Length: 284
Image (cartoon, rainbow, N blue to C red):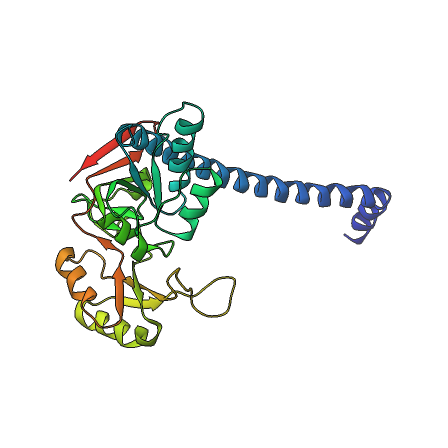
């Protein structure tokens, strides 16, 4: 048996460098192909969601922001970028909405308004808002919203409360039969830094689940909101029946709670950009 093995070794010896090089290149190519496929899949998914958000934003703006709209509230988050783009397009390309004032709900919204050369307002001078347009992290069948994934829930709720009409825009992944089906990061709650531990324990005692302090990714310590507060993310008990109005009131009454990310009986309509390119409208 030794002679055949030595013979094979002798025959293969001159070709070993070429064979090894080919094997290495093949392995690298397979890895690159796998990375490319993963990257392309992720990009395709993101593009699809952005397209859905844009469809919803344009439909909502075109229906609710008219020549009679004098003051519009601008929400926060990734979806609201398309809202401001569409408003700016109508102002600067179509010559409409020239007298309209935009009231922001966050630093991000304020910057978007200024970047698009729209008229910036504030609640001191514009506390009666015709329509407020914002996104949501999740919308259930009764139009109860979870908001605050980006940390602007308190200012968003204040501006929304000053508005005659609240319109929500979202992509198809935000639509649920009940809260918690799609959004698994919990309900955001803005709290005074001093009180976050007793608030956490009280929420868990009252309603179960787990409330966690939201920690920053690129800095040491917790995320700090535009108002200088901390955020708790309450992961409530899955599939448990909650009366969200009662939950919202009870949590809001805990000393140190500034606001919850539960928006109950506030939204009039929600525009969902669907995967097939249509827009689905849900009403309260």
